Length: 384
Image 1 (cartoon, rainbow, N blue to C red):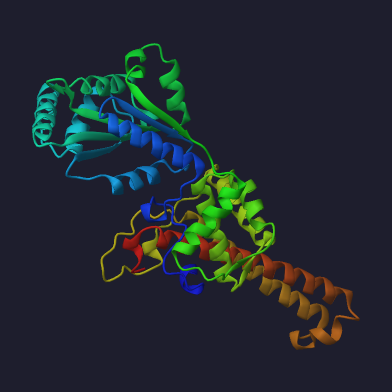
Image 2: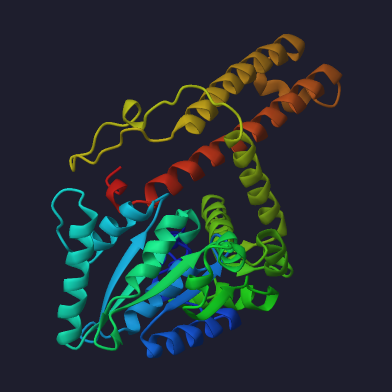
């Protein structure tokens, strides 16, 4: 929505990794240098860690664009809580290998044969494993064993391990991972953006979608944004999405600190609501007819929408009651302006009405923001 209102050619702050928006901070530049060095070695393990949302996946997506597929065969694994045997089968699948049944020996044999065939064809193999902090110790040991595959004196597999800070600590201190530690040839921890980098990051992404200076960012906004997000790129994207959406809804040509405060309060409210039990969910298909495309809207988390709409109805009823009270106190609504100077009861009733109208407007805005974010986060929902 806001991209159309501000005339952008795309969505500058989407949450999914997009190498087209890759921003080379000082830390990302170091990470790419370590990756380049490690890949040139052609063996062992490269480890990249960082906080949630620090840009690990975007870094890898950028790396994949620079790799020659004729020289390097890449498989990517996003893990959950896998043990060693499960990991072997997942690795086989990620390289496109079909292994009948759940035979570990058969899977290992198929993987080794595939690596040898690739080596004879002049290609090396790279395994990218994401969310490594979720791996069982036995899975990490299997990764080390896979690195033992060789053709003559040439290693057949190199691995890039990505994880959150706890994975870095596990590697450093686990007493049974000494052999894996000895095979790490490059390691880097992605740091958050500093205040100046946050400003450059925002301008970089906006420029990529043909930003022409609208909306304008008021003085102090980007500094405050850095403080609110700690320089974590994904958090910056989340807040900027909300800010620009609010600006489009309210038809603002400038974004300022007051709007940032409203967005942060709204996000904190969402987090608080998410930490408590909620009423039974109301699926979106009960409110909107299924589109012609047949898109599946089952199990849409629209609980907040339902609750806020219920609040809206309650406030509407309160507003109607207040108007009735006002009429009883001072006559018909058309006479309000004439009576406000002389009737304290009318003044009090008007103040209550104004307050309820403001609350209702905030609720409507929140409902609209949530619906738009839900629709835009998945292209398959565009028909809605």
